[in-house]
Length: 60
Image (cartoon, rainbow, N blue to C red; front, side, top):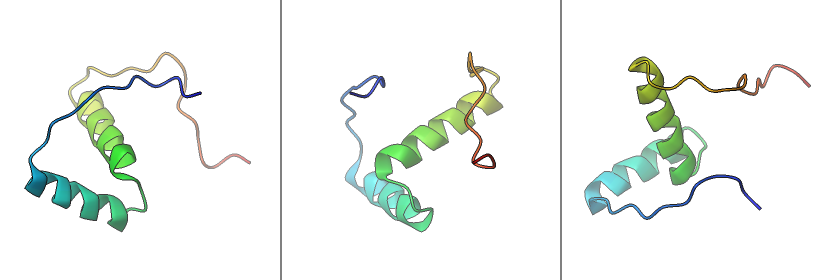
């Protein structure tokens, strides 16, 4: 079972279409794309500092 928090999000249908296309362009799910965008914005704002190092795709 996933350890991620679940919540309901109401979003404008046009914005969802944009996110859906963007996610497909980057080979992500819409959920994964939204999480990526939110983490990026939170890091840029200095509000996201993970407790543990992020997983690297460079290691086997």
